Length: 197
Length: 324
Image: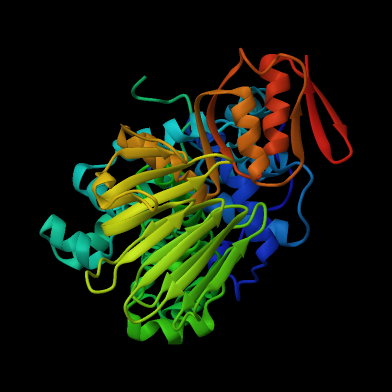
């Protein structure tokens, strides 16, 4: 199953013009697309050899998904996201000519095999809480310390800086890193990728 | 790879910048209208910015649930507007504050004997002029008598959390069914039941007095103490910290159960309005509930009892009946 669609739309959205954003697309993106990230990352890792490209690919796919959703929200977010992902991969592969097309032809089997229980769909939140806790535990110690003080203890930047004996700028850096690392763990990894338990 | 195939190397940079914005925005004390304008402009500049921001923001929002299970704290975003603000800024900020779903009120000059109530399923957070906080849970009423030399609250029904700025010259007290809780610098939560009430002390200390009794019968509560008082007796037990903080999960819209009897879990959900849950037969005694639920999640909970315990669910007259 090769992709025959022309590359006319193959323009990096980042160099396109003004950004149209819609609150309902934002909400849809958070609710429907982000929970697919673990499956998407698995798909990309299977099908793209150069691991350092994967974060960029993911971001690129997200932008295309968002832009397409502005025209109307799709009925099946999963099929929608993976179709866009596959088309993008095929175009990249075709250009780079380093991976045979067949690598993505098993998309359908793979795509349907991946279970994606979005946390928002789980009525019982015990597993989610354990997962959150484990993700926080895996942060680097100082980053975790700053995150816990801000998010769990509700301290101010100044108070955190005082307690940690560092500058507020350093606290800011820790909090920034916490958000990024947690996003990768909570969205990018399969829930059963637990290090402990 | 040819040059044109290389993705802009800035994905990482964008993500870092987005993560900074998210963390800054949640730091309500330094968040100003100017910063919001800057953020809006940054988000509008590129879809890549917006997506990176949405993703990190959603991550922080997810971790809000973790906060609900630790010790009580200042309100977190998305309730960030309710955060404690320097007093000089309260008036200015409050004029602009937009709070979704939950009301934040500042009593700059609370009138004498002011009555504050929440409906079933409601919640309210009050900030007194001295910086003390009161949070009312569902179906709760308090009277505030606030003057130069006293801060007297009466809990008329329901459940309320108190975070008190201690001031020896102006004691803070909570009256509840013939008893009085006097703050000695503290955070505590009081919950009324038909024939008793419970006080759980989280930080600092407070004195529990029986209004009919002698001063000598007052009990000083320490962190971890839970006092259960009826008209005639008071019993104090020490509970682990996590249990106390779970009692306050309602502040974040959650209920936590540990080995709760089904009947008690059902009663807990029914405090919050929504479809009423009704148990029939003798199913209540054996089944035990564990887990964290949304306070408005009665219907989800009912569905789970079907999946897990095999109970039958019937919806009738706006209620949900659970039977064998």
